[in-house]
Image (cartoon, rainbow over all chains, first blue to last red; front, side, top):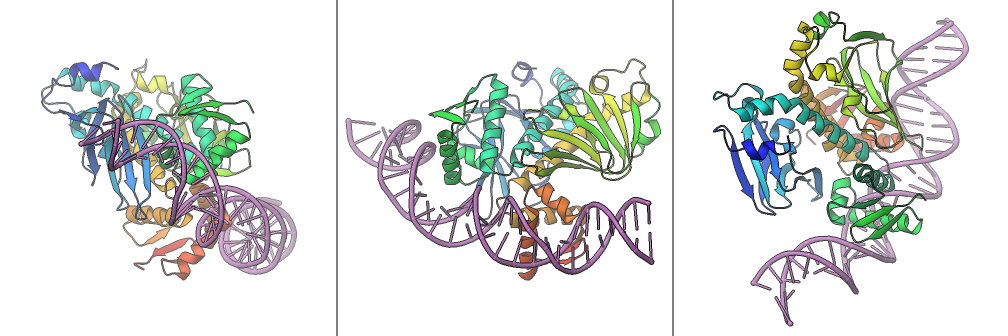
Amino acid sequence: MDQFFHEFGSQCRNLQKKTFSKGENITTYIAKRNQFCILIKGEADLIRYDLNGNRTIVEHFTKNDIFGEVFYIITTNNELFVTARQNCEVLFLPYDNVKNKCKTNCKFHTILQEHLSELILDKVTILNTRVELLTKRSIRDKLLGYFTILSTRSFSRVITLPFSLTDLADYLSVDRSAMMREMKSLREEGFIQKNGNKITLLSH
Amino acid sequence: MDQFFHEFGSQCRNLQKKTFSKGENITTYIAKRNQFCILIKGEADLIRYDLNGNRTIVEHFTKNDIFGEVFYIITTNNELFVTARQNCEVLFLPYDNVKNKCKTNCKFHTILQEHLSELILDKVTILNTRVELLTKRSIRDKLLGYFTILSTRSFSRVITLPFSLTDLADYLSVDRSAMMREMKSLREEGFIQKNGNKITLLSH
DNA sequence: ACAATAAAGTTGCAAATGCAACATAAAATT
DNA sequence: AATTTTATGTTGCATTTGCAACTTTATTGT
């Protein structure tokens, strides 16, 4: 699956491949259109700004992640948009076209269809992990929870934050200065060790 | 799809249909097993207790919702279990059996497979809505956000809470008394009107 | 119908978090 | 290399939230 999107991504007429530079806006979630996107290169974030100006990183996408308006029901009137964190390559295709058979019956759509439920299932597990994190009651628990997830994924007590501390606060949906204060306590109380964007989880 | 689970739910040997009384434990999420469940009758909740004794309603399931360990990666050592809120009927099947072809090639699995990605996609939108809610910064915004979602779904300014206020607090992952205080302010400031478990959203 | 249990509602106080405003360090841009 | 921009780190103070402990009102079970 890993190389599949690259290899076959440009063979069908019903999809578009676009390139984005760092910082560019990839798409905006406006209404329930059938937009389905695959990130085949780079990293991107789904960002929301609320009425008080708070920025939230709703989702963080890496290679082979899927996103788009099909996955989202817009209830509030907050702006939601996907921004390229690095230079990105994105496949755009109408979801109807993924779900139903492609007219041209191309190889891309056939394989995509076969793996579709697996791709979406992965998204569910990611979102469940995200909910688990956000339901934690304190900044401390959110931080430790997040570190634990990264640690589990990398099979290591030493983890590298995938984004800046400012972004981390927006991802955990907490105030940055309050988060920094909590990080300091965690260091002082011997829970973690910190060196730039590398953090070591200590047994305590 | 709606009646499908009932009609065909008992025709295949590779799945089990079980009944649960209100309050009973339907399943516990322990490890990444391939458990896939369909709630064909009743309502149920995915509950987590953290080390401080806080109860969180991680998810709320209604008729035709799918759940189970396939959707979950257990990272923390918190207990996660699904409890019947009402008398429930649940189909249990191994996910491998859903994904791949069923040996007996029965009608149930065939139709389920056809609709699988749609079912999982629905779950993604539900989870995205949940994340949207949980990333709101204050209890007030969480409450108003939740009311707005229910209002949009029911096409009405008058909404009926699907569970008790105690449960709502556990669902929004906030302290109950703090939530009650906020509800009171919302009433006093003319945002909402309240009558039992019926709430009316006012234009303000 | 009564008792028992659970939910709703309230409050004072403590603790956590958010806000604003900085200083300093690092990274990006010209 | 100098300048601008962005990120990190810190702090005092205000506000929000959580905690504990109640009373009152519903709901459930016998």
